[in-house]
Length: 82
Length: 157
Image (cartoon, rainbow over all chains, first blue to last red):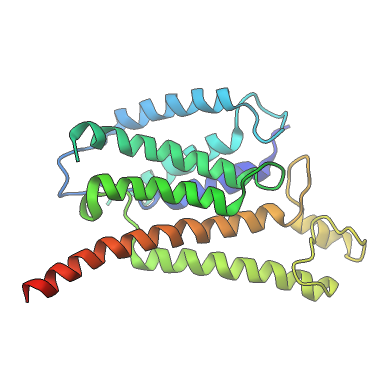
């Protein structure tokens, strides 16, 4: 059974920050989909290494960490495009 | 700042934000909590602001966003406290745990935090404090960066 508390709160925190990630027209650097793909892989490995924090036994990885990452991605895709 | 830093900092900041969220979520049973997690998330935002500058930073916190999140944090904390006061007579009474058994079970179920510890309102308090701190600490740095511009404008006049 996956605990919904850390999933929901982590998603909300990530979503709030994700909505504020916006491309800057003045910057020469562009962070495309490849950056987010690499970031997702690194974050999943990191969450697996952290383990089911804090003292949970529901999943083999830190579910709040992954929920925050998912929130960032969803926030970026929905409100962070402009 | 150098290009290497500019390539590295944004993905690192996103990882830091996830880590800060995790610190907030574990605050009821591990060291850390709302303030510490909020400070970690703010440090990620400040990291971006320092390396990219205020204009080019990929994480843009507007005045309205900061004001609303700060208000939501403060109001959320007070409302959780008042909910305890009105139902039990004690400000910030932990409605999700109900140690004194003075609250109806349906209210206890509403404020119960769905994880094995059933910590009641403490994770929610951590959450709202985290929101308030992440915005508050970022606002200080944003104000300093903007004040530099204002000073330059005043000097040029």
